[in-house]
Image 1 (cartoon, one colour):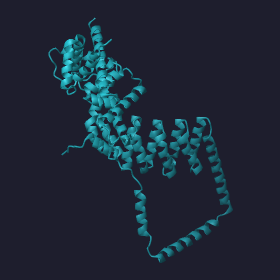
Image 2 (cartoon, helix red, strand yellow):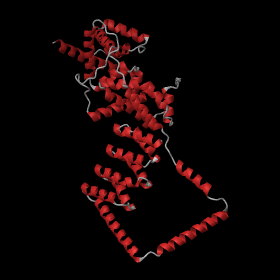
Image 3 (spheres, helix red, strand yellow):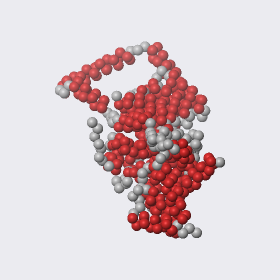
Length: 272
Length: 189
């Protein structure tokens, strides 16, 4: 069995290797013990030498790229989040245009009403043929929409991809189609479907609902490719409201380095 | 002209926790090299050591709200660093760090002594002995010998008494000594 004083000596030997860790009383106790214990004394010499030699190992230095990467990241994280600066400017412009005098305000309102009524009457005079063509066109559009929506609900990812493709080819996107595509971006299990849906929604890049929904989708998204596509979407739409969401992604420790670079770049672009 | 920031690490981190992310710059200046060296000694590789260093600072920002007012910054930082390294090892299954062939060597800037060949050989064996230690023992030696931490500070990081840390460091050194002598014997035979 090990002598308890030897066990105590081990802690003091480790303390002796480091400057300032051993007080006078401990140093003298250790000295006494080492004088009388050959085994501890031998360990002290051997391990003490090794401790010293560890100090001869060269000191590693980080590359300059590490600092550059950090500076870029910090810059992206410290860009202020942009809020509604533009609408405020627009309302100021409108205030200048709109007369303060109530009489003028009433006159402008009456003029608008008269123009509206006139335009309504002239449009109503359209012939029956034109109405029929418009009705047929609507029917075709709604059939296409139904096909697209139905394909987007299929179990097979290939069919859902076809549904996305079909939606993308439509001349204009109805709210129902937009909703289905947004749902695909948020919930579809297949990365290709999510990517294709983001691509298809590029047509309505200024749609507030789509942008808001993408801001919710980005933190949940696991695929680096989809994350990158969402970031590109925000840049394309110049959505400054997304800066905070992108910054959060940059700060995530486990985010893909390429996505982080792209996100950092996006924050710079949106800040301009 | 650059000004010297005299705020303590704790003051800077408190400012970061309060939303002043610019204070992170100074903390980075003060701490990034030590963290890089910590990760390099543990992993033996330059590029992962840099990635992990970067990640520690990102986690500090991300989890800044968890920084407590009575906390010691250094202990908090190293606890994050240990978690980052544990996650990295789990992800990359790097329980055993770079083998000798894969080990990235660092050029020594120290003047070469006349018996450099023997000394260099010893240093290589020493480096290998450190690498071959189990992860938790390697970490003990890295923290005590290379990071300049007191046993008390290590106790705060590892969550144990400083007396326990001393005994564990002694045992880690003893095991390293055995590995070193075995390697030396192998080399001689």
